[in-house]
Amino acid sequence: MSYVFLPLATVLLVICISILIRTPGDQIRVTNTYEIEPHIMTSEEMPRMIKVMKNFSLLKTVEVSLFVAGLILAFLFWPKDVIRGVALGLMIQCTLLYLFDHVASARGSVYLSFLKAL
Image (cartoon, rainbow, N blue to C red; front, side, top):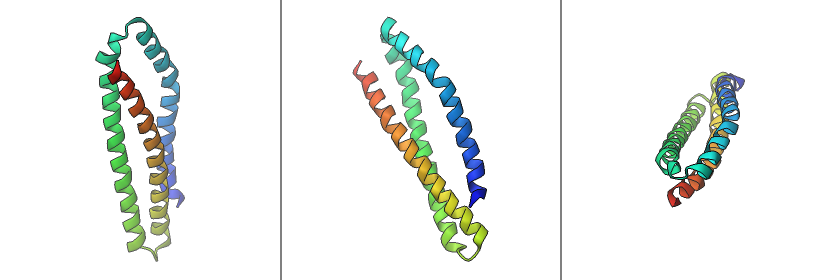
């Protein structure tokens, strides 16, 4: 099962570290823009967030597709230990990633609603 966790976990680690590094600067940029030039929020920040929300939609579709692929693999190759382990690992990883992206998407949706209300 660990075969599938290593590559996906590595990708997730890189994504999380990049977000962790980028977020404080984004928060300062958005706060300053909102306080100094709020009109820029609708012309620059809203298109960025619309793109982010589309990316979440795409990511969740890919995660569901990979989960289904893992489910199919698990049923088709249940007697083969390695393939079964990879399939189950893929299903677990995709479930966790989907939950993470669902929460992030919900938060992004609230922020996008705020931007639309400006």
